[in-house]
Amino acid sequence: MPPAETPDILLIRQTRPDVAGRLAERFRLHRMEEAPDREAFLDAVGPRIRALAVGAMCPIDAALFDRLPRLEIVASFGVGYDTIDAVEAQRRGIVVTHTPDVLSDEVADLALGLLLATLRRIPQADRYLRAGHWRAGSFPLTTSLRERRVGILGLGRIGRAIARRLEGFGVTIAYYGRTPRADVPYAYHDSLLGLAQAVDTLIVAAPGGPGTQGIVDAGVLAALGPDGIVVNIARGSVIDEPALIAALQAGTILGAGLDVFANEPQVPQALIDLDQTVLLPHVGSGSHHTRAAMGRMLTDNLFSWFDGKGPVTPVPETPWTGQR
Image (cartoon, rainbow, N blue to C red):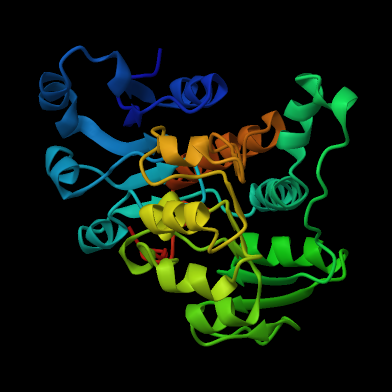
């Protein structure tokens, strides 16, 4: 049992049992999911909470900050933090941390797997065999990665990891982001529409949030052309989902491989019904190895903070100045 002076931490949505175990050894841990009455729970413990440990995709906003007047730090389990109001946190002097780098390779691996599965229709071929259709005839020929022109939306850590893997396939690579990068050899386009017009395959690796809401819209999809492929391992909000469904149904583009959706875990039945889609339940970082590393980074941020050393991986909106 932690001593009386130990900081109180609130865990919102379970991450991993080992994460909760590490936190409980060092802090007085309160678990939101175990509270039968959330409002009464926050009334009771909110004034004592100094840190949040947050599972992926948890909304953290000003209303919650109001209930936690002593809050110093929010440690998020994941690289994306668009559900956390980091700007409001910065205004209140609250640091937000995330888990970059440790999941980049895993997500990039999955992006390439999803791309190949979509192009070569691997799940569909598997179903074809299992249903006994091979005995009646060969599976239909598919499109290929050969001679593809691949565009990456967002050339951050994950986008660059995807691009490095694509280099081994001998494809043309281009990208669009907020600013061009001087340290990469890929062609830069100063608009997403311009990128889509120059490629036939679009991999979405951009962060979510208001700035990217629905930016892969009907115009971008049409620009990819009838051989167009879209792969999204970022956030479902980045793609205009109804426009994507319409483009697939009309043959405006050829197919889509999606690991993320606009309203998870709800997936539109229209996407499920389409045969030219490959759909995954947001498993980009979903390996034992990577999730364990993410958990260690979350706890390392909190341990470092309460040791007086500052956060390990603060988000850009709440940079660490070395002062508390």
